[in-house]
Image (cartoon, rainbow, N blue to C red):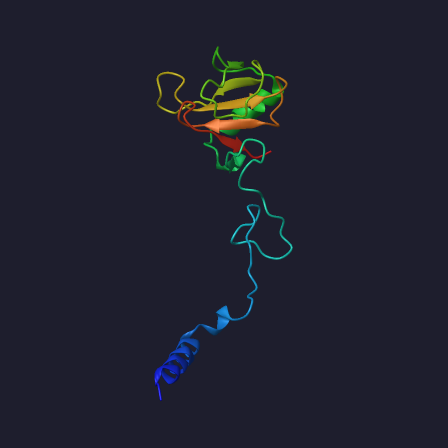
Amino acid sequence: MSRLPIILAALLLTLCACADPSEARPTQTTVQTPTQTSGQTAGQTAQPTRDPHSGLRYIRASDLPREAPPVLTQIARGGPFRYERDGVTFGNREGILPRQPRGTYREYTVPTPGSRDRGARRIVCAGASRSTDECYYTADHYASFRRIQP
């Protein structure tokens, strides 16, 4: 009589005994959406981490350098601005911001303490000249942007 069926049966039993029992039944999976944060508790409204229009990460106004919120206030008031070039058209040649018709974006200087010139920090806003609904911050002279959370 061949011992092969006995060996195969023993092997099959060994494999079944070693298998992870959790794989045999469906598991409940928790999916964390982009609008959730790991520290979120029930009843809290999550803030999205990325702007759905541009795909850029959000930054809260309170997380901007201390020189930036006064610039946002000046933009909303229509000035006065510290630098002559504040309010000029930003061409978006880097293509990082959403593509819009020329003249959509305007740039404003965020002063850099200790800098002899305008420095590299800017706020770029879209829309009407006093609108701060869609503004972006760059600390590296347009190499990267973050959407300022409305």
